[in-house]
Length: 164
Image (cartoon, helix red, strand yellow):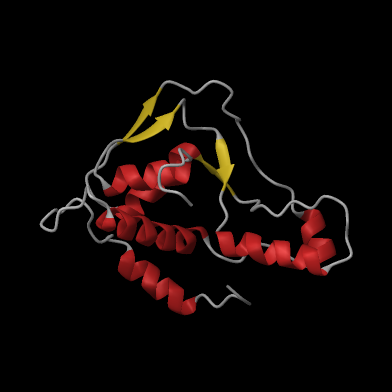
């Protein structure tokens, strides 16, 4: 995922890492479903290995409101960012929840990486990218370790997917 792609995941993580305001467009009640890239790749590989030729949704059916997601990011990153609502974006979909019934039945596939694990990996990646950028200063406390790192590392020890 590119850091400046303008999507909610990268926007919220970068805002939190920089101790900026985490901006929620509209009332924050619109939903999204998030999936870690390895789950999508596994689904695509399963689809390519099959003889199935109809459309198959390889998304994650677990919904989160944008407001809830902002608070999840804030908790995982830590810091002093505030979560604030701002004007809604035109044509912002109100609900995104994929139906993976076909993927489960035809491909025996469903996402395996828990949201907090995928976010931990993504936050770590963005933190490293920020540290490499020209904006990083060695003595800066801007990009700090997450208070949730220990919790997530313990969760990682208990998480054993079929394949990642």
